[in-house]
Length: 390
Image 1 (cartoon, rainbow, N blue to C red):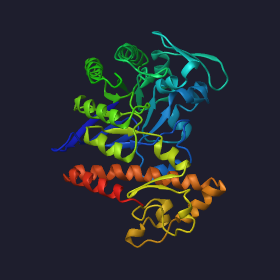
Image 2 (image 1 turned 135 degrees about the vertical axis):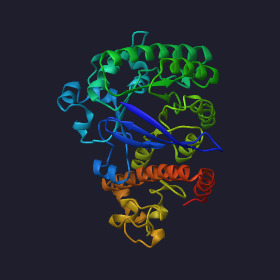
Image 3 (image 1 turned 90 degrees about the vertical axis):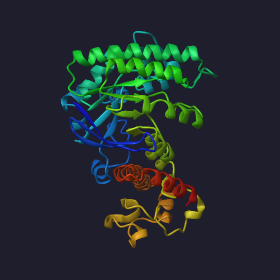
Image 4 (image 1 turned 60 degrees about the vertical axis):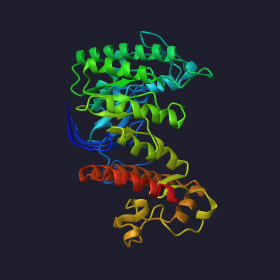
């Protein structure tokens, strides 16, 4: 089941406000989806995710197939029961993980032969197998198996001919994914994925053929795969707003706060990225006023919170009142610097909570601005604030 209601559009851009109804709940868009690769968003309790406003999270088909395996998943009725998250879940197809295996995999028309990175077993992933795994996972949004077209292939930039070959196979795999999804009578929603590398005309061909297949929703894949930022922005400006207006649009694996605001401007409804969680574990913090490196020595005796405007548990404590509004709860930069230096697990847990809260709050501010007709002003203020620096 999927219903998408378009609630508001921005007259000065392609930005739009929507509501997505899925089998496990309603999602307000534009939305950022935290990534829970192995059935958990690293370092964050499910209750904390709910408190910070997460509406939908990701699971990873490839990794959950490897561990704990489909027999375990089936015994829990799917991923929701296994990880105790009862709101919507989107699972990727496994295509990106297969791409990242490099020489450990062999891609053919039938599918992908590869050695398990867990125990070396010889395995096979096809569009049909991906649909079967995702049906067991019972994710609300299922992604077709595609070939993630790389920016570079064996040391050279992917050519137009290589990108076309990859894109056309992804279209054939889309048809096979759709047929198997229907055969399995999966009650959830299947998205098609637009490919085509850095070539706008290939993106357009992919888009048009997928639209003919009439998927409930569409994703833009094959970005954030090593290309320069201006190349990614060029594809972002070309593709999302050309997808059907009455269906949700998902930009896969993107990105920085600036990428999210630009993506919304170009008509994207849904985003995911490991950046807020991965960067938090590596000491990079996203704030309203730019990025902060908590490992820098200057934070050793800094009494400020990570972000004086933030109401997350790391910044405001249990009061939920930001320093900007007179609160004095939460944890100092000095304390978080100390935890990082000592390798204490509480450090990355708190910084992860903050980064995810920042991303989710940014999307909430965008939704409010779209409702109020002030999205242009928000974009301008966002750019000013982020440039100010911490």
